[in-house]
Image 1 (spheres, helix red, strand yellow):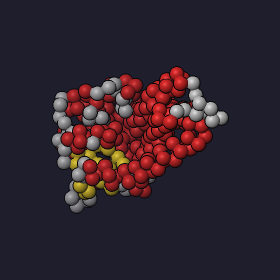
Image 2 (image 1 turned 90 degrees about the horizontal axis):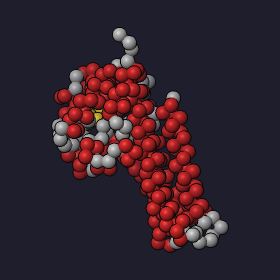
Image 3 (image 1 turned 90 degrees about the vertical axis):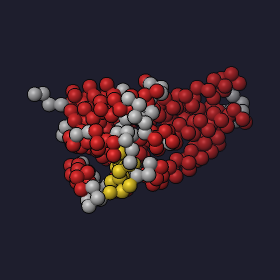
Image 4 (image 1 turned 45 degrees about the vertical axis):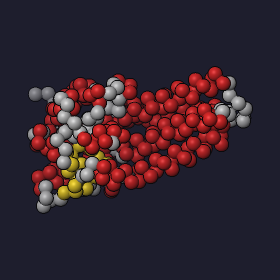
Amino acid sequence: MFNLMKTAILMAAITALFMAIGSLLGGRQGMMLALVVAVGMNFFSYWFSDKLVLKMYNAQQVDESSAPQFYGMIRELAQRAQLPMPKVYVINEDAPNAFATGRNPENAAVAATTGIMRVLTERELRGVMAHELAHVRHRDILISTVSATMAGAISMLANFAMFFGGRNSEGRSTNPLVGMLVMILAPIAASLIQMAISRAREFEADRGGAEISGDPQALASALQKIQRYAHGGVPMEAAERHPETAQMMIINPLSAGGLRGMFSTHPSTEERVARLMAMAPAR
C-alpha cells in the first residue's frame, strides 16, 4: 500500500512539475505542443515495446513442448496471480536476468535468460518469474510510459525555451536568469521523479511476486545471486548494446559501474532483500 501511495504521489508530482514548467516557459500553447509530441513518441513505444525489446534481445518463444518445465512454472504462477497466460521467451545470455513486457495483461510476455535458469534453483527462479508477473498485474509498462511522457515533455519545454525563449501563460518573456535555471534544473527534477517511480514499482513487484509465489525468501536469495553475477563482471551483451532497456530487468545489469541512489532505476538489492525477508513467516 505504501508503494502504491508513493507512486501516486510521484505521478502527481511529475504532472504538477510539467504544469508549472509549462506555464513558466512555454505558456499554454508550448505546454500543449510539448505534451502532444511526448505522447506521440511514447505511444509508439508503449504499443510496440514488447516486439521491439524481444527482437533486440533475440528472444526465442517457447511453449509446453520446447520448454515444458519453465512453461509449466509460468502457467502455474499466472493462474495463482489470476492473469491470462503470457507469452514465454528464452534469451541465450550467460548473465542471469529476466523481464516482463507488454502493454496490458492480455498482451504480456515474460522472458528469462539461459543464465538465470542455470544458476538459480527452481524455487529461486519461481520467485523471479512471480516478480515479473507482478509487473504485468500492476500494469507497470503503462505507468512507466506515462512517467516517461511527462519527463519527455518537460525536457522538450526546456529545449523550446533554450532555442526560442521562454514565454509564460500570459505570453510575456520570462526572466532570463530564472528561465536558465529552470531549463537546467527542470529536466533533472523530472528524471529524478521518473527514477523514483521506477524504484517504487520494483519494490511493489517484489512484494507482489512474493505473494504470488508464496516464497519471499526464494526471491531474496535470487536477487542476491543475480547481483553477485552483475558485480562479478558477467556481461549482458544485449543490454550493453541497448542500455535503454536495462531498466526493465529484475536487476539492472549495467548498474554495477553506474550512478546510484537517487539516480538509479532500481532500489539497492540490500534493501529489497531486507524487505522480502521481513515478509517471510517466522520459523
